[in-house]
Image (tube, rainbow, N blue to C red; front, side, top):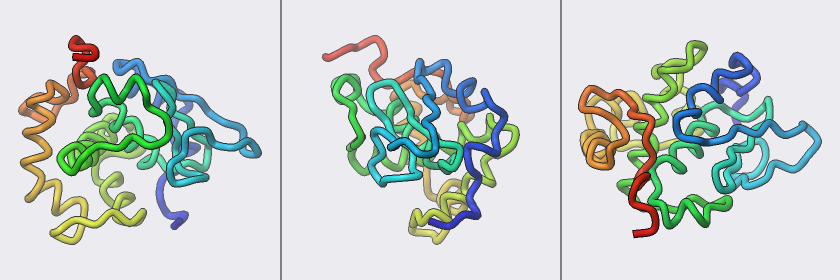
Length: 170
């Protein structure tokens, strides 16, 4: 992994927690020498189990927000069984990427542009060659999906809702 991406240790202590608070997602900081629970990609990437997001100070912010956005975007059935592998299809994965860029804008130390650069550095690939070009020119399907699910407004404002929030297990 490239060490040029922003790490969770570079954020103010509660910044990530505050952004994720509306979603009832708990941020759990794990000691450097302890295993990172629920990490699909392995250390130092974020892990997710239920409504707990596991990070270390050396966890990339983009990884933490990506896993958090999977939690936000998945349906309630998958959310009740969530452990390590968030799953989801193509539309949901694109929407997760779109939403993580919007949530990064709420982190004063990061912002959307830095998130997109970090996504490129981590190794995301987009048809247009970069996260920024994808976000600006090719992500209308992801935006529309998020609007349909009630997760953002047409003006790209996160609503603080999770998918199927009121429609548990139906």
